[in-house]
Each structure stands twice: as C-alpha cells, then as structure tokens.
Image (cartoon, rainbow, N blue to C red):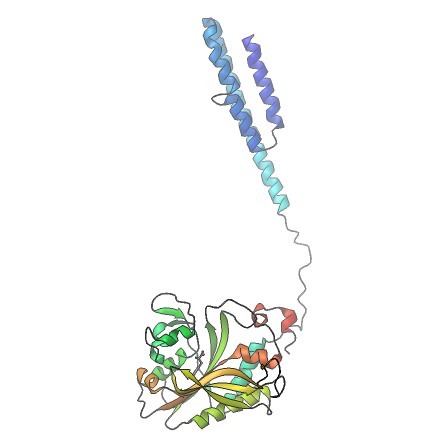
Length: 343
Ligand code: DAH
C-alpha cells in the first residue's frame, strides 16, 4: 500500500514535471516533491510503522524514485532553459535585410558656427592675424590666476566653473590662451583663438553648458583703444554687412583696463528698436579691452615695453543673431533638417 503511494507520487511528479512551463514553476514542484517538507520525505517519515523488510524495501524503492526524479527534473530544467534562450534569440533577432535610413547625398552642410567662425577668422587673417589654440581642460592658473583673477577674487564667480580637481578645470573662456600665447610666443603677435568653452548652466534657448568663443589678442609696442575699435568694427562688418555699426560701452573685466562691452546695431530692425534688441537698437556681442599690465607681467613679459588689446566673442551668439536662430540648442543637435539650411 505504501508502495502504491510511492508510485503515485512518482507518477504525479512526472506528469506535472512535463507540464511545468517555466523554471520557476519547476523549482516550486521540485521543492514540493523532493524538498525537506516534500511528499517523498513525508512518506519516508512513516517508515517507523513498517516491518524491517518493508522498511528496507521502501528505502530502496524511495531512493530509486528519488534518483529518477532528480534526473528528470534536471533534464526538464535544461530543456526549459534552452527553450527560453531560443525564444530570447528569436525576440531579439534583427532583420539585416531591412533597408537602412536613407542618407540623401547633397544635404550635408556646414554648421552655422563654422560659417561664422570662418568669416571672422578670414577677416582677421586679412589684417595679418594668425590662429592659435589651447587646451579645453585647463589649469586654474591659466584660466584665472594669470589673468589677474587670483584665488578668492570675487570676479571668479562671474563664470560658474566645472572643476576637475583643485588645480584643473574646463576652461570657462578662451582667455587662458592669451596667457599661453604671452608666455610662449615671440612678440609682437596678432592672434585669433577659437575654441569650445564650458560653464555650469542649465541648457535653455539662450544657454548651453558648452559653447564657442573666439579670442582676439594683439600685442605690440604701441597699440591703442582706437586700434581695438577699428579691428572689431572690421570683422563685425565682415559678418553682418557694411551697414551694421559697432560701439564700445564701459564694462569691467579683471584682465582688461579699461574694459568694454561691444554692441552692434540691431541686425533685425537696423537700429530703430524692436523686441529683439528690447527697443534699444543695439545688441551686446562681446567683451574687450586694453590688456591689464598685471596679466602681461604675470606671463613674464615687460608691461612697460608691451601693450595689448583683446576681446572674447561668443560665436554662438553671433551665429544666432546673424541667422535669426531662436534656440542655441539647435546648433548642437546635429539635426540635418536644421543644418541643411546653411549652405
Ligand atoms: N573672457 C571674457 C568672457 O568670457 C571676454 C573677454 C575676453 C573680455 C578678452 C576681455 C578680453 O576684456 O580682453 O566673458
């Protein structure tokens, strides 16, 4: 009788085992049959009531059943795993014969930043400038200290900085290249210095944590504010046209004295006053000034012999104004539909 029970447990387990559809279901079944509180264990617990021969016989048969079930469970587990793997591969299959996205020949175009950069650069090369570049990951010393912004100078907060560590940062402007040029080049020089700069800013229509600047630096024995004004006016006209005027407005930068902001007459309304220029007829495009003698001295050159002027223009801002781009983020998204307009 007890042997019949054993055979029933076996038969039932084998039947359910074939029906188990997942490895979770299977291991649940395994526990309910072979586990510590399982059916097979329960039957062995009743051994006490049996005779010695019956006990030996039950032990033998129960072991054989157990053995068989362990093997069958293992085989079923392997089968389910294989099936799951096969289904996964099926699900993730890629049809390599599907046609790809069409890349239409002839829609490629230059980014407006590149166009504006080249216009400014070429106008300046015509005035005897050459290009110079520096690293995007920069020393605090070059980005700030040499430019007359010693540690704890309040004006360091004018630009929110991404620091890599105490001494290294992502440059917040192209001005550290002024220090690199002053330290390493033979003077006099006329330099145009393009590059990406970084500031901690939430991206919105007029802010991007990465944007492009172009620094200008002229170092010579005898330069004046008039030279600065004339140089700036010539590339403003090259980019925006002969009718656009520029003006200098007093401002403050630690690395220039005097310092100024450059405004251009509004390219939208021509100076009459509109919503783009907030009714003033002028739009701000950059900072500039006569280089502070402290910067020249910090970089190892004699400020009594050398004078300099410089500016830092936001290329994105100029591109947005020139082409009427309302959202700076468009410049960085690389959307072909946007870019294909700039041919
Ligand atoms: N570096 C300044 C900025 O990012 C702009 C600037 C550059 C001002 C050079 C200057 C200068 O006076 O000489 O806002």
